[in-house]
Length: 222
Ligand SMILES: Cc1cc2nc3c(=O)[nH]c(=O)nc-3n(C[C@H](O)[C@H](O)[C@H](O)COP(=O)(O)O)c2cc1C
Image 1 (cartoon, rainbow, N blue to C red):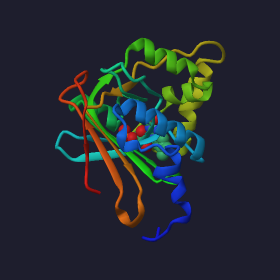
Image 2 (image 1 turned 90 degrees about the horizontal axis):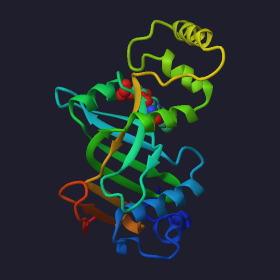
Image 3 (image 1 turned 60 degrees about the vertical axis):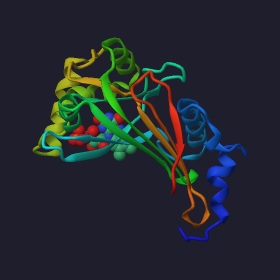
């Protein structure tokens, strides 16, 4: 994008906030809800896609995309951003060893990003069961068949594993695998960034000492 590009600027900070100045927001979950609604209306694919960063046992960072499957409503202060995965995957073991994470949403068509950091909690078995039950049958079978993040000999080996699980569950309810569940990142920091001309972007950071505590807001230099 050129330093001077302006045609699409309406997609960014100004238009998507409907003329309101997002830097005046007092509560980050409410602002996130507004921005996520804008992204849901504008992004062609996966507005709920977010990069999830963790660290391994040696302190080496790792990052990959996951889909946000829930963000709790403002006011439920100990709550946060939920995703689901295989608990035996790289991210699963990294979060078991160090239950802290960072998230990044980047909505290209809006020229906005949101950064989130905080401790991570497992979702309850009931939440995981409910979400698993809502998934397409093929995805439920896939969750049983895939040993996510472990070496796979061939595509055929994966297809064979899918066929074995399918034969085991020809009809009816497929239970949630014990190795498949979700995590909730409970933010202690959320930063909202919107593109502005000449790289003089707007940044607003909300921080709190611990989940449930009061938020403190700062503007940051771009
Ligand atoms: C847009 C997008 C969304 C994804 N969503 C998920 C997800 O919700 N859960 C998941 O386990 N993997 C998801 N993946 C795959 C992960 O990026 C990753 O390949 C996989 O989870 C293994 O990561 P790990 O080895 O770090 O555990 C997604 C990938 C993309 C590109």
